[in-house]
Amino acid sequence: MSIQLNKGVNFTYIPSKKFKTVEILIRFQTSIQNNVKEERALLSRMMSTSSLNYPQHSLLTQKLADLYGASLNVSVSKKGQGLFFNVSMSFVDDQYLSQNGLTEECVDLLKEILFQPQIENGLFPEKTFELEKENLKHYFQSAKEDKAYFAEVQMAELFFHDSLGQATPSYGEESRLKTIENAHLVNYYREMMATDEVDILVLGDVDEKKITELFRAFPFADRLTTNQNLFYSPVENNLIREKIIYENVEQSQLSMGYRHPIRYDDGRYYALHVFNGIFGGFPHSKLFQNIRERDSLAYTVSSSFDSFRGLLRVRAGIEKENRQLVMKLIYEALQEIEKGEFSEEEVEKTKLLLKSSYLISQDSRNSLLEQEFMKRVLPFVKRSNEEWTTGIENVTPHQIQDVAKTLKLAAVFFLGGNGDE
Image 1: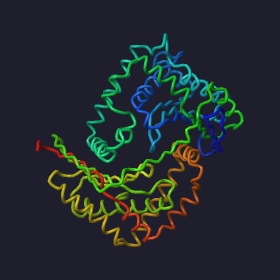
Image 2 (image 1 turned 30 degrees about the horizontal axis):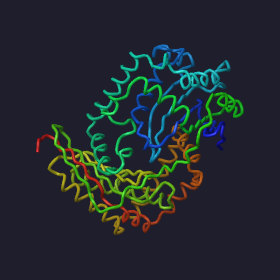
Image 3 (image 1 turned 90 degrees about the vertical axis):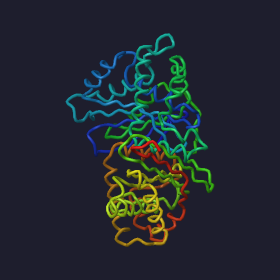
Image 4 (image 1 turned 180 degrees about the vertical axis):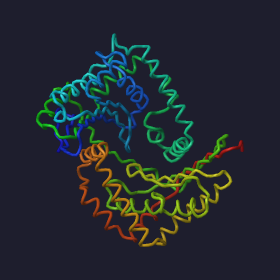
């Protein structure tokens, strides 16, 4: 159950005796259309390395070690139309220690990280600012070297050609990073802290009243609640955007993007899961079995979907000369599912794996925090563990066929290896 500590500042406590740690996630949410990805990415690095009383990274690291090995992570992410700045901490539950007070110390450190960054005379330390800016630049460059990921980014640019916010990764673009000055980043930090809607989520076995009061003491001002629509709907047309690049790499990368209309809050959501499992989500899927195992045409091949942005991806690592044949086999696999050419055994195996994966996720602290966040932002989506399992079990072959019929190819990117064609 969520409460508001201040206007636009939400607090959710998730009681759990499953773990010996306490997990805290503080999430700042804004719209992806605000064009601030690079600021948030750079700010995440600045705020994870130092604070007013721990001006060097080594001092902050030592402080975390003194807190019985507490961990701190500051990151950026996105979901649909939402752009998130995440500050998370994990530490040992007091009840497993010979002394009390660790919870208060860890929450106090979080408070300092958020409200007392190392800012003097309106600037971050110039040396640290330039260093972290350079580190983020290297991260951009290293991401380009991961050719499978590079292909995904290129395909997304084709698929989301009408939306810069959706086309670029959550950390933004290197070209815009260069334009960010120190004073601008400080001003943005202050803006984010004052205006972003905030979610504080606590998972663990702690005193609810006590932990609530600790966070109530955080000096968050009231801010507007966004009631932001997280869902993005791709433009509907019959165009297929295609791009081919050749580089001197050993393995070629094929990335295909299909539009689909099934959102997270759609009744067909469960059928989308089962369809994807049969299509390319598991080792027994048609893409894996036909393209990789039967015909040995791919090093790897799989599919996955995004129910907040209407995208289903197909990825394949292949030889350059096999591009057309692999695309033909992907098309044929989709046609087979549309026609109902899949066995009862395939369906049951997929459902079993989906339920097993879901049960495993219930032992993941990050997954549980994300589930509770979704309940807060989408309260109309009622999806308990039992309802999720039942929803998967009740998917029919006809519903799987209907999902396949909704898919429309919209973008194809191919990175061809070992050549300058």
